[in-house]
Image 1: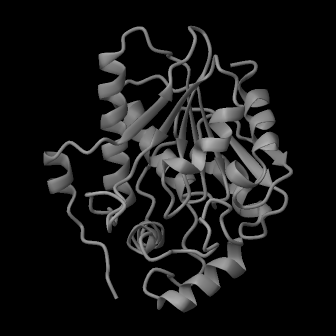
Image 2 (image 1 turned 45 degrees about the horizontal axis):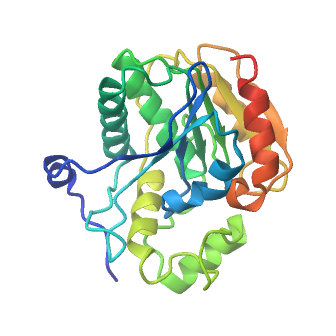
Amino acid sequence: MPYAVDNSEKLTARQWQWLLRVRGAVPGQPTFVFFPHAGATPLSVGRLASLLPRAAGVIVAVLPRGSELDDGVPLLRVTDAAQGVAQGMITLLDADAAGSTRLVLVGNSYGALLAYETAWRLVRAAVSIERLIVSGFRSPILPLADTPLYRLPLAQLRSELSARFGVPPDAGPAAVWGGELAEQALRADLQACDTYRHQHDESLPIPISVLHLTGDASVSLEDLKAWKAVSRFPVSLTPCDAGHFPWAGQPDAMVRTLLELVADG
């Protein structure tokens, strides 16, 4: 069974492209920075990007996926991935003085955890963030409640993930978790989730909006409410009529919710 190799130094030396800018924002309009679910690629944001107003900026985090998907090596720690994405964002902003300053980080499932850790690194680098929007993941301060998934044999892993979350609409024609090419990235992302431990003594100085995906039974309402413990600001809990994979499954509802949350930003 192949497993990902922790090789963040090699990736840094090779200057991995951590972000893909789909389009820039019209001045004054928000730029949404998307962090996809475990095992996903930037393609998972395609439907959202097409439905968001053309004036809104769209950026997506690009993690190395390995196998034959790219020439990168998937990372096994959230902190390593967050550091790479944050540095990519800082570089992008430095090179684009006219870019939008209304950065809105949006993460679903594993992407919610990665967006949270990336936000911390951007805050420490004095990058202004308007809001963090998360869904499909428990508060980072809560311990892992389930048995780690990343070491399960592939057939059992697919069965367990499908039972908990359903199948991602962007899983491809095979309609399964962790296809032959994506297994390495999926296991790496799951290991990053399963081994994560919250290390921040302070509260994040950014407003956090938590989406309650009403069709998602994988995370409890109480676990979502616990995000209040990690923000210095009041945390809003917003119902959204969607399942665990709203970006591809219910993109219209997701876009409406995102625009409502940033309307007064």
